[in-house]
Image (tube, rainbow, N blue to C red; front, top):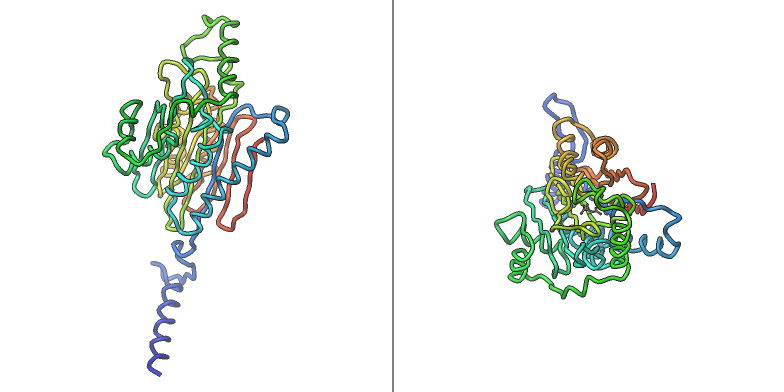
Length: 352
Ligand code: ASP
């Protein structure tokens, strides 16, 4: 009998907490969002002139299956209740380890024939962030960005200094040869041949490269919402083929390539970095949601399809809001991308 009484009190408490009245006295039967255990994840593998007739069936399949492998890993972690940050790093690691994408193993070559890698990560719960640029020996740059965020008092470390910090952490270092891939090296040689045949003097700035428009980029990024309602975003890249003068793009720049805020959304960008820096793309999407009340879709479309296009830049973003709504907007013919919701519904796509 005593046990029954305790049981009924317990049941009433649960019912009362679910059917509560709001300030106006209106009875709401809405389940608090925390107990919905909503979660979701989206990834990109770069945007650019990716046309169906340029990709063989087998290459298209290879891209799609790597995207699927990566997103399934992140989704599994989220499903198990792990954090959005863990899902973002683990997912990006898979893409970094694949030669298909311009990040980690598949990083593009600089003008001097080296590979210089950039990455950044942001925690939407705390607005903590970590970023690294100009790495030449770090196998998974996103892991070092995460260490900068969690184990240092800084946000952004560069080059030799960043690698000296990596040596104090549990970070896998590799020789520079690790980043050599034949395809990426040939892309550099092609671009340099074109440069000498067309007058380089026509170029208005050292960064202006008429061929960049025609190249496939291939940066990788991931955004995630975990079961605790926390958002995170990460981006990792080799930058742009033939980059000079220690050029750094948007990928490691918080607010341009990566941004996350639990109040709004998590964003990862890919595309012509100079324009994404000038457009402060990732933060702009968040700000449009925060200050103007736009949805994640409206904000991403406005920034990518109007603002960046008007500036003359191309690329795209993946973004997820705190309810799990996802936007994958791009103004190029294609963007390697995938999305998986809490039900495990998977969408993998490349072309428009
Ligand atoms: N945004 C990168 C950069 O400019 C390139 C890319 O996304 O593919 O370095």
